Length: 166
Length: 101
Image (cartoon, rainbow over all chains, first blue to last red; front, side, top):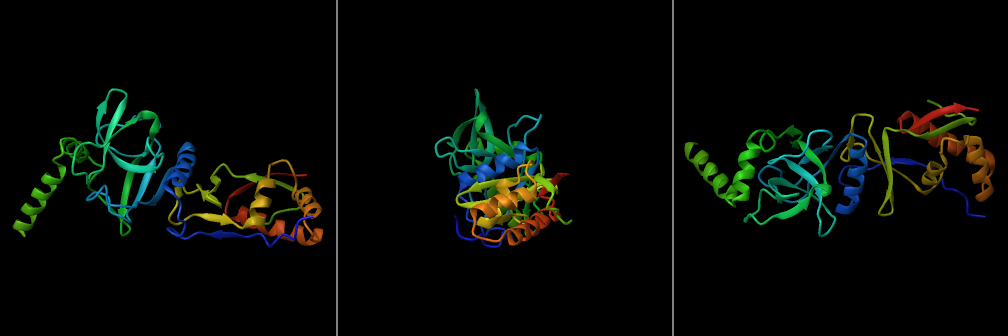
Protein backbone atom coordinates (compact mmCIF):
# COMPACT_ATOMS: atom_id res chain seq x y z
CA UNK A 1 0.00 0.00 0.00
CA UNK A 2 1.26 3.49 -0.88
CA UNK A 3 1.89 6.15 1.74
CA UNK A 4 -1.04 8.51 2.43
CA UNK A 5 -2.02 10.99 -0.28
CA UNK A 6 -0.97 14.53 0.44
CA UNK A 7 -3.80 17.04 0.21
CA UNK A 8 -4.49 17.54 -3.51
CA UNK A 9 -4.13 21.11 -4.67
CA UNK A 10 -4.35 23.26 -7.74
CA UNK A 11 -1.95 26.17 -7.89
CA UNK A 12 -1.36 29.03 -10.23
CA UNK A 13 1.99 29.44 -11.96
CA UNK A 14 3.05 33.04 -12.40
CA UNK A 15 4.06 34.02 -15.94
CA UNK A 16 7.73 33.43 -16.51
CA UNK A 17 8.10 31.28 -13.39
CA UNK A 18 8.00 28.08 -15.38
CA UNK A 19 11.34 27.54 -17.11
CA UNK A 20 10.06 25.39 -19.96
CA UNK A 21 12.41 24.45 -22.77
CA UNK A 22 11.64 25.53 -26.31
CA UNK A 23 10.61 21.98 -27.08
CA UNK A 24 8.14 21.93 -24.19
CA UNK A 25 6.70 25.29 -25.23
CA UNK A 26 6.31 23.92 -28.72
CA UNK A 27 4.34 20.93 -27.44
CA UNK A 28 2.07 23.14 -25.34
CA UNK A 29 1.56 25.66 -28.13
CA UNK A 30 0.75 22.94 -30.66
CA UNK A 31 -1.87 21.48 -28.31
CA UNK A 32 -3.53 24.89 -27.80
CA UNK A 33 -3.47 25.79 -31.51
CA UNK A 34 -4.89 22.37 -32.41
CA UNK A 35 -8.01 23.45 -30.51
CA UNK A 36 -8.28 26.52 -32.73
CA UNK A 37 -7.20 28.93 -29.98
CA UNK A 38 -4.40 31.49 -29.82
CA UNK A 39 -1.38 31.03 -27.59
CA UNK A 40 -0.05 33.99 -25.58
CA UNK A 41 3.47 33.90 -24.20
CA UNK A 42 6.57 35.94 -23.53
CA UNK A 43 9.19 36.15 -26.28
CA UNK A 44 12.80 35.56 -25.34
CA UNK A 45 15.84 36.90 -27.15
CA UNK A 46 16.62 39.73 -29.56
CA UNK A 47 16.65 37.94 -32.92
CA UNK A 48 13.46 39.79 -33.99
CA UNK A 49 14.62 43.20 -32.82
CA UNK A 50 13.40 45.92 -33.40
CA UNK A 51 9.90 44.56 -34.04
CA UNK A 52 9.85 42.06 -31.17
CA UNK A 53 11.91 42.75 -28.05
CA UNK A 54 13.06 40.33 -25.38
CA UNK A 55 10.15 40.19 -22.89
CA UNK A 56 7.42 41.26 -25.33
CA UNK A 57 4.23 39.23 -25.10
CA UNK A 58 3.17 37.70 -28.38
CA UNK A 59 0.04 35.93 -29.60
CA UNK A 60 0.37 32.99 -31.97
CA UNK A 61 -2.81 31.92 -33.79
CA UNK A 62 -3.52 28.83 -35.89
CA UNK A 63 -3.26 29.24 -39.66
CA UNK A 64 -6.71 27.68 -40.19
CA UNK A 65 -7.83 28.35 -43.78
CA UNK A 66 -5.54 31.29 -44.49
CA UNK A 67 -2.20 29.98 -45.69
CA UNK A 68 1.00 31.61 -44.46
CA UNK A 69 2.42 34.31 -46.74
CA UNK A 70 5.60 36.32 -47.24
CA UNK A 71 6.26 38.84 -44.48
CA UNK A 72 4.32 37.06 -41.78
CA UNK A 73 5.98 36.31 -38.47
CA UNK A 74 5.48 32.65 -37.63
CA UNK A 75 6.19 30.18 -34.86
CA UNK A 76 7.86 27.04 -36.16
CA UNK A 77 9.73 23.98 -35.10
CA UNK A 78 13.39 24.40 -36.07
CA UNK A 79 14.27 21.45 -38.36
CA UNK A 80 17.73 20.91 -36.83
CA UNK A 81 16.85 21.17 -33.13
CA UNK A 82 13.03 20.82 -33.07
CA UNK A 83 13.01 23.91 -30.84
CA UNK A 84 10.37 26.62 -30.97
CA UNK A 85 11.47 29.67 -32.97
CA UNK A 86 9.55 32.83 -33.91
CA UNK A 87 10.92 34.47 -37.07
CA UNK A 88 9.71 36.00 -40.34
CA UNK A 89 8.85 34.31 -43.66
CA UNK A 90 10.92 36.18 -46.22
CA UNK A 91 10.79 34.06 -49.37
CA UNK A 92 9.14 30.97 -50.82
CA UNK A 93 11.69 28.40 -52.04
CA UNK A 94 9.89 25.53 -53.78
CA UNK A 95 8.06 23.65 -51.04
CA UNK A 96 9.98 25.38 -48.25
CA UNK A 97 10.17 28.82 -46.68
CA UNK A 98 13.26 30.92 -46.19
CA UNK A 99 12.86 32.18 -42.63
CA UNK A 100 14.93 34.93 -41.01
CA UNK A 101 15.10 36.82 -37.76
CA UNK A 102 14.64 40.56 -38.37
CA UNK A 103 17.88 41.20 -36.50
CA UNK A 104 19.95 38.96 -38.79
CA UNK A 105 23.04 40.57 -40.24
CA UNK A 106 22.96 38.37 -43.34
CA UNK A 107 20.24 36.85 -45.52
CA UNK A 108 21.18 33.22 -44.97
CA UNK A 109 18.40 32.22 -42.57
CA UNK A 110 17.07 28.69 -42.66
CA UNK A 111 14.89 26.71 -45.01
CA UNK A 112 11.85 25.27 -43.31
CA UNK A 113 9.18 22.97 -44.78
CA UNK A 114 5.49 23.88 -44.41
CA UNK A 115 4.97 20.99 -42.01
CA UNK A 116 7.22 22.69 -39.42
CA UNK A 117 5.13 25.87 -39.28
CA UNK A 118 2.93 25.98 -36.18
CA UNK A 119 1.09 29.30 -36.30
CA UNK A 120 1.25 33.01 -37.15
CA UNK A 121 2.00 35.88 -34.79
CA UNK A 122 -1.13 38.04 -34.71
CA UNK A 123 -0.34 40.49 -31.92
CA UNK A 124 2.65 41.88 -30.07
CA UNK A 125 2.42 43.64 -26.72
CA UNK A 126 5.14 45.69 -25.04
CA UNK A 127 4.54 47.01 -21.52
CA UNK A 128 0.87 45.93 -21.91
CA UNK A 129 0.41 48.05 -25.05
CA UNK A 130 -0.03 46.84 -28.61
CA UNK A 131 3.00 47.19 -30.87
CA UNK A 132 1.80 48.55 -34.20
CA UNK A 133 4.80 47.95 -36.44
CA UNK A 134 5.93 44.63 -37.84
CA UNK A 135 2.74 42.72 -38.64
CA UNK A 136 0.82 45.12 -40.90
CA UNK A 137 1.33 45.87 -44.61
CA UNK A 138 4.89 46.97 -43.82
CA UNK A 139 5.70 43.28 -43.38
CA UNK A 140 6.20 42.93 -47.16
CA UNK A 141 8.90 45.62 -47.17
CA UNK A 142 10.51 44.14 -44.07
CA UNK A 143 10.68 40.74 -45.81
CA UNK A 144 12.04 42.30 -49.00
CA UNK A 145 14.85 44.14 -47.22
CA UNK A 146 15.51 41.21 -44.92
CA UNK A 147 16.04 38.66 -47.68
CA UNK A 148 18.45 40.98 -49.44
CA UNK A 149 20.39 41.52 -46.21
CA UNK A 150 19.58 45.24 -46.13
CA UNK A 151 16.98 45.46 -43.38
CA UNK A 152 19.34 46.63 -40.66
CA UNK A 153 20.91 49.19 -43.00
CA UNK A 154 17.49 50.59 -43.94
CA UNK A 155 16.32 50.68 -40.32
CA UNK A 156 19.50 52.45 -39.23
CA UNK A 157 19.05 54.96 -42.05
CA UNK A 158 15.42 55.62 -41.02
CA UNK A 159 16.44 56.00 -37.37
CA UNK A 160 19.22 58.47 -38.24
CA UNK A 161 16.82 60.51 -40.38
CA UNK A 162 14.26 60.53 -37.59
CA UNK A 163 16.87 61.64 -35.03
CA UNK A 164 18.06 64.46 -37.34
CA UNK A 165 14.49 65.77 -37.57
CA UNK A 166 14.31 65.89 -33.79
CA UNK B 1 -20.06 24.88 -7.95
CA UNK B 2 -19.88 21.98 -5.53
CA UNK B 3 -18.94 18.52 -6.75
CA UNK B 4 -21.05 15.53 -5.78
CA UNK B 5 -19.77 12.12 -4.77
CA UNK B 6 -22.14 10.46 -7.22
CA UNK B 7 -21.14 12.84 -10.00
CA UNK B 8 -19.09 11.83 -13.04
CA UNK B 9 -16.62 14.39 -14.35
CA UNK B 10 -14.09 14.76 -17.12
CA UNK B 11 -11.61 17.40 -18.26
CA UNK B 12 -13.28 20.21 -20.20
CA UNK B 13 -12.72 20.66 -23.94
CA UNK B 14 -11.69 24.19 -23.01
CA UNK B 15 -8.49 23.11 -21.36
CA UNK B 16 -5.11 21.72 -22.41
CA UNK B 17 -3.42 19.53 -19.82
CA UNK B 18 0.02 18.10 -20.38
CA UNK B 19 2.74 16.50 -18.29
CA UNK B 20 5.82 18.27 -19.57
CA UNK B 21 9.33 18.18 -18.13
CA UNK B 22 8.17 16.91 -14.76
CA UNK B 23 5.39 19.45 -14.36
CA UNK B 24 1.69 18.86 -14.88
CA UNK B 25 0.49 21.95 -16.73
CA UNK B 26 -3.09 23.05 -17.22
CA UNK B 27 -3.84 25.82 -19.71
CA UNK B 28 -7.46 27.05 -19.57
CA UNK B 29 -8.84 28.11 -22.95
CA UNK B 30 -12.23 29.43 -21.90
CA UNK B 31 -11.17 33.03 -22.64
CA UNK B 32 -10.37 32.03 -26.23
CA UNK B 33 -6.62 31.90 -25.78
CA UNK B 34 -4.03 29.78 -24.04
CA UNK B 35 -2.46 32.40 -21.83
CA UNK B 36 0.98 31.32 -20.65
CA UNK B 37 1.50 34.66 -18.92
CA UNK B 38 -1.56 35.00 -16.72
CA UNK B 39 -3.55 31.77 -16.79
CA UNK B 40 -1.35 28.80 -16.15
CA UNK B 41 -1.97 26.18 -13.48
CA UNK B 42 -0.47 23.03 -12.10
CA UNK B 43 -1.47 20.26 -9.72
CA UNK B 44 0.57 18.64 -7.00
CA UNK B 45 1.20 14.89 -7.21
CA UNK B 46 -2.05 13.95 -5.46
CA UNK B 47 -3.96 16.30 -7.71
CA UNK B 48 -2.44 14.71 -10.80
CA UNK B 49 -3.40 11.25 -9.53
CA UNK B 50 -7.02 12.35 -9.13
CA UNK B 51 -7.07 14.25 -12.46
CA UNK B 52 -6.00 11.11 -14.31
CA UNK B 53 -8.87 9.18 -12.75
CA UNK B 54 -11.47 11.71 -13.95
CA UNK B 55 -12.21 9.70 -17.06
CA UNK B 56 -15.86 10.60 -17.57
CA UNK B 57 -16.91 7.10 -16.54
CA UNK B 58 -16.19 6.69 -12.84
CA UNK B 59 -18.07 8.58 -10.14
CA UNK B 60 -16.11 10.42 -7.46
CA UNK B 61 -17.29 7.77 -5.00
CA UNK B 62 -15.70 5.04 -7.13
CA UNK B 63 -12.53 7.08 -7.61
CA UNK B 64 -12.27 7.67 -3.87
CA UNK B 65 -12.79 3.98 -3.16
CA UNK B 66 -10.01 3.09 -5.60
CA UNK B 67 -7.66 5.57 -3.95
CA UNK B 68 -8.56 4.29 -0.48
CA UNK B 69 -7.57 0.82 -1.65
CA UNK B 70 -4.19 2.07 -2.78
CA UNK B 71 -3.30 4.66 -0.17
CA UNK B 72 -3.15 4.41 3.59
CA UNK B 73 -5.88 6.93 4.34
CA UNK B 74 -9.49 6.72 5.59
CA UNK B 75 -12.10 6.71 2.82
CA UNK B 76 -13.97 9.69 4.31
CA UNK B 77 -10.82 11.78 4.28
CA UNK B 78 -10.07 10.85 0.66
CA UNK B 79 -13.63 11.65 -0.38
CA UNK B 80 -13.36 15.11 1.18
CA UNK B 81 -10.07 15.76 -0.59
CA UNK B 82 -11.44 14.57 -3.94
CA UNK B 83 -14.59 16.68 -3.53
CA UNK B 84 -12.53 19.72 -2.60
CA UNK B 85 -10.25 19.48 -5.61
CA UNK B 86 -13.02 18.66 -8.10
CA UNK B 87 -15.11 21.58 -6.79
CA UNK B 88 -12.21 23.96 -7.36
CA UNK B 89 -11.56 22.58 -10.85
CA UNK B 90 -15.27 22.95 -11.65
CA UNK B 91 -15.32 26.54 -10.44
CA UNK B 92 -12.46 27.29 -12.82
CA UNK B 93 -14.26 25.50 -15.68
CA UNK B 94 -11.47 22.97 -16.07
CA UNK B 95 -13.88 20.06 -15.62
CA UNK B 96 -17.35 19.34 -16.86
CA UNK B 97 -19.99 17.29 -15.08
CA UNK B 98 -21.24 14.54 -17.32
CA UNK B 99 -23.88 13.01 -15.11
CA UNK B 100 -24.84 12.13 -11.59
CA UNK B 101 -25.38 8.41 -11.04
